[in-house]
Length: 125
Image (cartoon, rainbow, N blue to C red; front, side, top):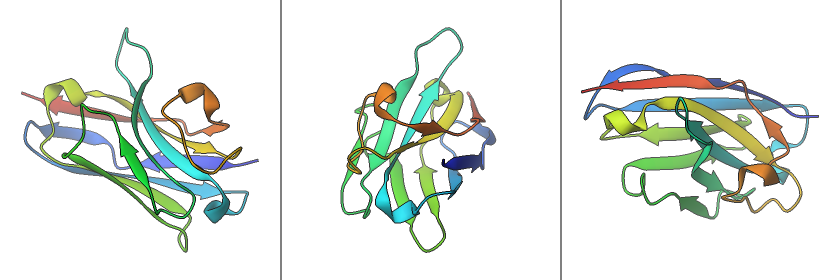
């Protein structure tokens, strides 16, 4: 079992920044990949970013490339999502997720094994 708790969401003006955190517990954090997804009202869950077990590789959705950065601190069992140059279309509930099968991450939400409860990010225009 893996427990994931997100924090850091909130309300920010367009062009601003937020940093999301996701604290993990229950299994060896450095053995699995982590991902961030988001879901806006009436929309499907959308891939945002993923990072491999070691942190050596990261992948991003085209919509956030160059603006968002995923990172992890295996000593703190935490993954981060630094979000800069935020746009109103980034408004969504953001979820972190753990992928234990390969440790390499995925863009597909159904390949993740555990999910956090989500944190709301609202970007005003």
